[in-house]
Figure 1 (cartoon, helix red, strand yellow):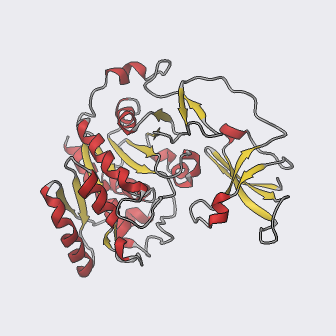
Figure 2 (tube, one colour):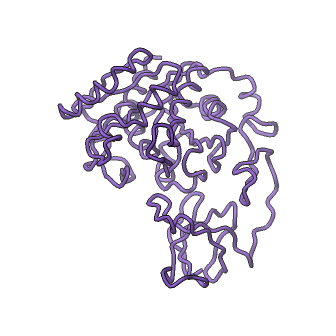
Figure 3 (cartoon, helix red, strand yellow):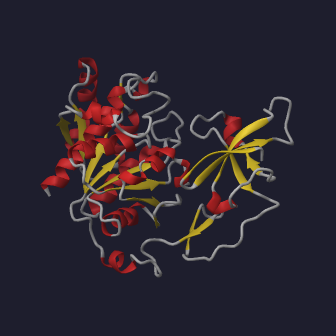
Length: 354
């Protein structure tokens, strides 16, 4: 290992010189280590890497990942929990679930049966998180907001620099399913929502996958279908599901223009319970017409809600992280981020009225 780079909660960047490489490989690569799995890397360490993401040229996952520090393995840590995540992979990790025996939240969560009407904002992409949060805090700055990270994208919460930068604005993060590394761990989204409400004391919870949306360009082949499942989970637990729509007039792919087919599939086909689907005011006329037409078939089940957007642009520009979705910043895909912020504003109104 040649040198250390940036570090943040749960992750450490490093630069590694490759020993075994082909003529087409670079001499050095940027790598990422999760210290709670492999230990804390030091300059001079021999590093075993997984370079699949680099070989595929992935934008979100543009790191080699540290598998081990073979000559300096971490000491065995005391095992506190019984929940295995990243199961049966070489880097499976044992975690203490918020609702298992031995957890300080066990009694509260064992007795919890519902969310008490808590608004739950559901989104397809991780990039929606800071925009939704900005919309919430624009109107309800003191609202306690929790985040449930599902396992559709990055499994390690530490991979997200966005999440690290928002730590002081969140009541906490719950990693659900195979994802791990949050302030609390949950077996599934249902348990994650209950933990957000009854262990973290959230007034509002945001649910989305981690960075690294997976998709094949087909109707069903994308990890964001889980957004529809999260709507069902929120509803069955007595929450108020709010759907953040993926809206864009900047995406070059026809299937994502207007209302993305990801939103139409997740909310129109997967979500069996009703949700409030939020449309922001102020969209360009042609985009607004596209959105209205795309959502019309969904009105048989869902409530399409129009939300005023005055002040949301300023709130989005004040977030402590760079807004980016598919390589486009706030000005490059303004409608997308505005729609997410409007969903947050609607959730804040629901929480205030409760």
